[in-house]
Image (cartoon, rainbow, N blue to C red; front, top):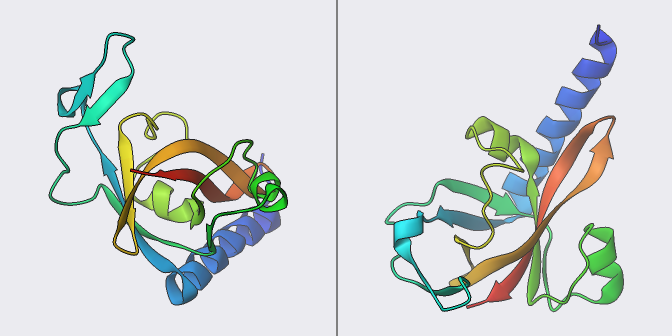
Length: 144
């Protein structure tokens, strides 16, 4: 059985992260495409994303949104490669929308719109773990 005090603390931490991101963050739209919305090349890699859905599956806030991150910032976000940007998004927004970290985020077909720019998700991660719950979903973004 879960300790009720720990569950209340975890919920409060998730809500705090969501409130801080909403107040200080940059609006970020997540667009998830189906297989019919992408064109694949001879190696079965995504060659083109043929259409952008009219409305995002999720609108959340990225705080911080780091452009041209250095190696330390990448490591802190729980990611491993070079990116054009890293977005820290509250995991509570994802669960409130009924999305999960593992099943809902197909990085190959998903794009992100933030500050008037389009990005593809190169890698995803989880950061700032509270018990067994990650407070942030981090997205390593590459400009399209």
